[in-house]
Image 1 (cartoon, chains in turn orange, yellow):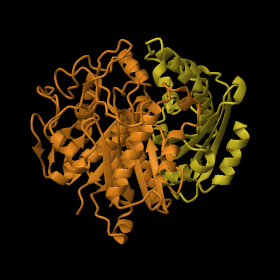
Image 2 (image 1 turned 180 degrees about the vertical axis):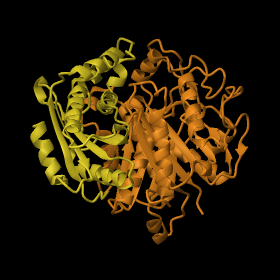
Image 3 (image 1 turned 30 degrees about the vertical axis):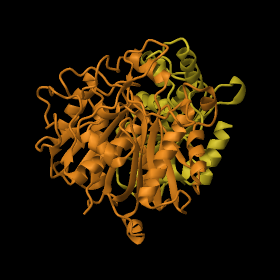
Image 4 (image 1 turned 45 degrees about the horizontal axis):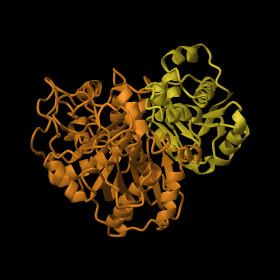
Length: 379
Length: 187
């Protein structure tokens, strides 16, 4: 490790709740099969596309948006804790939870309460020994929860951080993305010649982080290592990615420096992959600027799960862990005609094998929030 | 650089959302930012301006702490949902992280940026740990910690910001001292 690099953090548990299900392996199999998890959700209003990647919660008491937010978070946290062999009440365990807009714009009581109320409700429900640490950085929230958790462990402020992102589809988001024209009128096709935007999704992703020493002391299997984290801001626009992609480049460079690895060591990249023409161009140019000279496979998950906003960074980190474990990346669902001149291999139609030991996940959020995570397969 | 020696390199306070020449330019592009976001942008500017040496804002981080959001912008968007139309310009201004985004656009801040939805007493130790990590690894040369408060009854928002640097000269930064500054500044 270089002088500026940091101690890796172990990932010892993970869980997700997605439109393709909530079983870790079952959802992964469906991703490998290239499945898309979209349904038509009626709206009282004119939206650009009725298709959304919704998580069914019928049969539960979680009907309103604020209830669904808490339900998705608590159910996913329980499964991640169970896989990690931990209890929320364990001393020294911190919950670090992020969302973008949750139910703030759709339910007045959520907006006028302290903005962390949803996270504290979840912490209480799970019997956590400390209040949750709550954050919001738009679509980077899930990835930033992991960044913050890693830093807390490195700083000795926590033994274990259970980190994740959660978000729900609401009418405000459907209307806003319709107006922004970031929403595709058809299908989401990242890096495809016919790309014309994203489709909304919802869900949650949670990862258990702890120091390798702590994991070893309790005999916890290490699923992967979070080797490096880095973030930056575009400082350019409230909605569009910076055309020069300076923020994204800085985030990636900082994460690589934090990990103490060279760009050539990264064998796969999980792109933000919203399938808007500007995002796909900016990401391609960003990767070209940094990874020129080697050929990491670039994959994307938003055509499986939709754009789950505050959850996406955590969900995609899990996808990277599974891709490293299995030695293959899932095909990009909906991708049939890759953009001409895209500088890196894209998995089309079938899973693509690889021998990478290091993967990178990039998340870009409204307001310029760029976060990059470097993940390593376990020894 | 010794991040164990975190000192306050600058302080800023602002009340209301008055905009100077630079923010007036930004306002043309970001029309509907919440008053709290403008107040924070002013406080951030004041903290940066108070720095004894110029900083490369590509290497300055910004962490906002607090439990309040851009309530006016949020209410406007929420009200429009029932009418079946959400303004694409107002929507991003209604995010809990909008104040950070506006300050970054205004002042070219490209370091790590976060909006921690935490009470100051709980959030400051976390923010200081983040600052020490970023500064210690040389990712940044300064870290801005900011917070805003929306008083009850519609009074103008108040914002405050401190710039943390690892300079051995200056007032050492710690939770109690920062808490005192924010409490006094935000009322």
